[in-house]
Length: 215
Ligand code: C5P
Image (cartoon, rainbow, N blue to C red):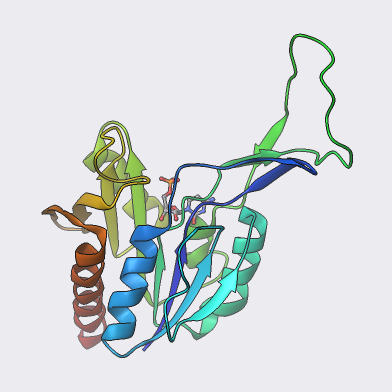
């Protein structure tokens, strides 16, 4: 099977030396990529900047910005059976990228930000993807309700949700504890190392794809 995974943060430039980013380490997405490779599938990993080694045997596309990630996904999604959007994509990017380093002048500085493309949100509609679609939701409150709203709005088959208000799980941590939000029910998985959880989630997503394509 051909499987696309987005992972890591994006980096939105402000000027030649500064950027906006977030605390995503990329570990969860890379762990799922490992699990799927181990199960013998073709994995295309589209990743923002991380400190992780590129897993053996994956096809790898390095990107920086949300716009670059969107372009890479748009280019490859048509050939995929499964798409898993784990990346923590910036929702906003500076309206203007200054060509010179911004100097300290007044006491305040206002940056104008504009929305980035919603990559997951464009998969079904703009890109016409009909395969198995899995999203992630990182929330600090109303985890299940927010994840369920994402599932419906974006036409996902599964949203994997984690509570990022805890510092010992989720963003920038080696552990994660997730809720699995399906159209007709919700399950939960106990806290586990991301490497282990990656294998579990890989198997679970493959089962979901088999169930979806068998009816
Ligand atoms: O950031 P948020 O919690 O809304 O992300 C939910 C899901 O949407 C994640 O799977 C993330 O990878 C994806 N996403 C995306 N493009 C964006 C924002 C989020 O693909 N611009």
